[in-house]
Length: 454
Image 1 (tube, rainbow, N blue to C red):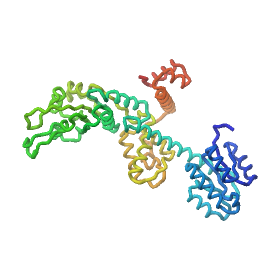
Image 2 (cartoon, rainbow, N blue to C red):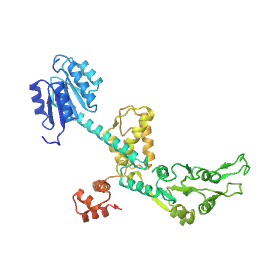
Image 3 (tube, rainbow, N blue to C red):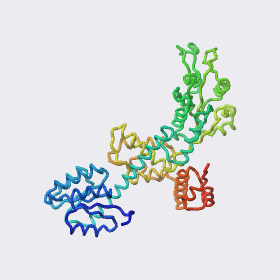
Image 4 (cartoon, rainbow, N blue to C red):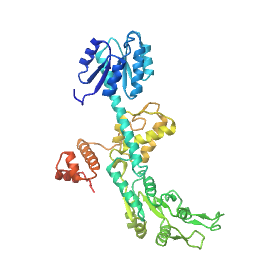
């Protein structure tokens, strides 16, 4: 039989019913077993996703002891297997006990082939969904381990960013991270620090937009005792605290112009003076900064110093939005599901099909931070074993951009091309061969979809 057909194990000792079930399930690769030993051998050899099991097996055909022993053995060997048990008239208690022991569902004898067929199809659907959940969870875990020690991604766009950061980590240059809010700029900054020669030294972060303008200077540069009312002791600033390590200036575009002058002087001379101080203090620190603002436009408007920009932006890394990271929303959703489930003592089996579709289709205006918040709320509030689209408040997609058939085809083409390019490490000849097209055709498709193989 074709290896493409689904494998269904039928554990049934009645030869007439064996023939009837084999004939009824011609769309499946049906494996027949008439005893517990035969069932376990078939389970190990064929690894079927779904099993139908008659509880009345020899040597106890009139009871259920051997059937329950077989159910237990199957679930110990392969816990993910969907076992559908058979019960005769008046044996509903046995069916309920089987469900309590881990069976997926039950059917009543005499067999209604149509009803059983529906249960079997549903079991295969659930098995497929759980297998996809496990695959994505494994991929998310591997991505977490392999990319900068904490970035969850499988998207070529984000992998390119990670490789760039790894390359510049050991260089003594200032790095500017450009990206929308919620794209993970601080996580990337920490990854850069951890991959650098300064990894054992301090990583000090300051959000320049979160501190009032009149306090930002003292936060950055520190102050001497008595420098102003309330300065009852000397306080080192963030720059000084990052000595020999990394200073991360988040939302650097919010630094006011007068303070930009003082920051520029520090970057030129590598010494600071605390507020109220007279003694220059040399500081060895690497600067990594980030912003969601268009600094070039701010320079043109006179709101950001051009000379400071070039001091801070020796290397510029542009971070894609979550919507541009094809496939990453699902990976991150599984990552957050595992993380928040552990933190809150929950035991979810994964996502329903509508949740997976909604996560993939949503445009994520708040990027990774939005996804993280939705996942945390869903894990805390949901009472089901699987999260659905409504749990994530993604039930209505009215706000999502309209998707035409052409747009859907273009998106599918881009996804396949990006995945193949990533698999071939951007080798165009290998990618074209894998796609079954010529290299010039691949060039044309990449140009059409705005893809870069560099």
